Amino acid sequence: MDKTTNGFVNSFIEYLQIEKNYSENTINSYKKDIEQFLLFLHAEGIVVTDVEYFNARLYVTELYHQKISRASAARKISCIRSFYKFLLREQIVKENPFALVIQPKKEKKLPSFFYEEELELLFDVCREPTPLKIRDLALLELLYATGIRVSECANIQLSDIDFDIGTILVKGKGRKERYVPFGSFAHEAIQKYIEEGRSVLMQEKEKHTFLFVNSRGGPLTTRGIRYILSKIIESAALTGKIHPHMLRHTFATHMLNNGADMRTVQELLGHDNLSSTQVYTHITKEHLRKTYMNHHPRA
Image (cartoon, rainbow, N blue to C red):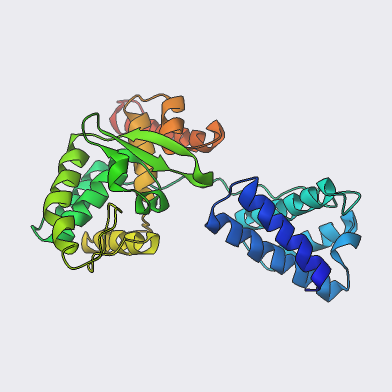
């Protein structure tokens, strides 16, 4: 990458950090997508400021040849479009060559979720009276009670929890904050963890205020939480394709199945757009259809 192009990219990254307030993970994703695009331009012998619509279409064709998912292709195209929108704003280019490029439609996959019987199996795995199992149960109860992301869970501080009114302050994507309530099961599990689990794990560690800690008393990372959840799922001997994010899907699905309105679930999940939440209506409709087919005499 030449110095001029490198300067354009660095300016764009600063724009994402300062003006857009994007998270570190999102920014790293943008960097990788731009680097891949620049490698394509280098192979074609084109500089960033000379890209035209024809070149943009050629890049989209190259993405198809790589046989990546539609969602990944759409993300990469969106990233480069944003990059050129920034260059256009800064008057570095005269037009956005990706402005008219049509993104591939994402596959409509219904989010997977746990049935209540499956959840009980997960909770049962964590019912041993050891500090780590007490932590794991609190982790599981909180994720199911709130529907927060694993990354949001890793950043929870002790001061973010209000036991009196049963709410937790969650720092979401783009550093946006929201208050999410939690119920009696999570309340009991978290309080027991703080008193009997966290305090034991933290004995020989420099004090910090993160809620969840690892076996050495240090802050539990996003990767660490995913590992713990994967082990819980594995120990419960559940079959099929199961991943930690299913707890978030389960929260939303169970809320809607039990009569919660879409706007409330949207706010609790921290979705910017209602369309992101509406995917769960397909699950609840499928649930209704299966219930009907199983119980109606003339189904």
